[in-house]
Image 1 (cartoon, rainbow, N blue to C red):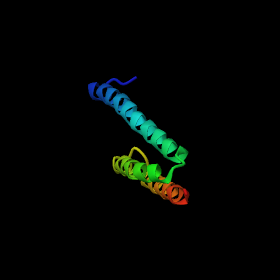
Image 2: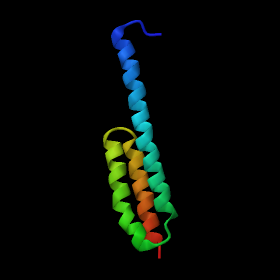
Image 3: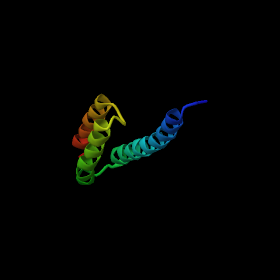
Image 4: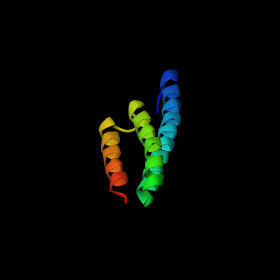
Length: 84
């Protein structure tokens, strides 16, 4: 266990930050699932920019890796374009 006051505070901060990051990562995964489940092209095209913005924000704040965000955006764009 930590002996220093600063180390104890750091542990508290890390727990809080991990919970915050977990919430946003889960929200992002749910949004991606929702977009993949859509079969209507107009609805998917409307939702895609929202999900794209979310992915970019999470990559910018290092909640997810920038390459993961790029890969997801690419696959989702292909999915939206494939819909008929």
